[in-house]
Length: 172
Image (cartoon, rainbow, N blue to C red; front, side, top):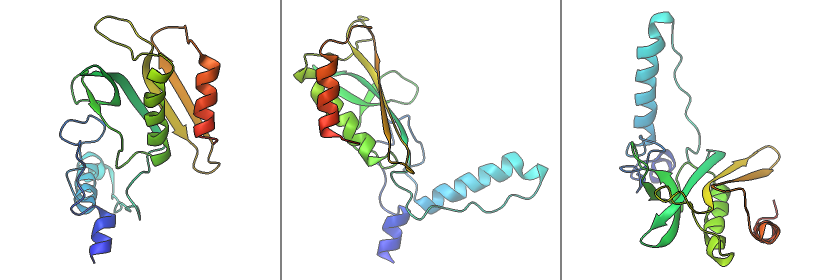
């Protein structure tokens, strides 16, 4: 059915997959991804014994509970996303098909809050700036969320105000 096809990924390829270094299979349907992974597993492990069929997920989206976003600049504005495959160019990503949706929201809010608190993104060319990466890890069982800001300096102006605003937006 059409609903099943959408759930399994038919016709829902990722708009970032050509550049993104985060996942290389999002141009395939979910069934094609499973077949690809099964063939690779058999190739690598089949000579050691029988390989059971891979069991797919009911909903193969937004399952990644550890999300890391790089921060930088594009045309003078702060961006966040993933590194382009085989480079240090950042592909701006606001929503990812496999990352936890709450993590994406938090990363987007961090990006929005930076200029409001007069904080900058780290610039690899000059070695100056504040924020390099944000790591968000969510425990699905307890719904606890950890946010780690990786900075280019040990000075965090207005740290308490920034953290309080992030907590106000995301109580969990």
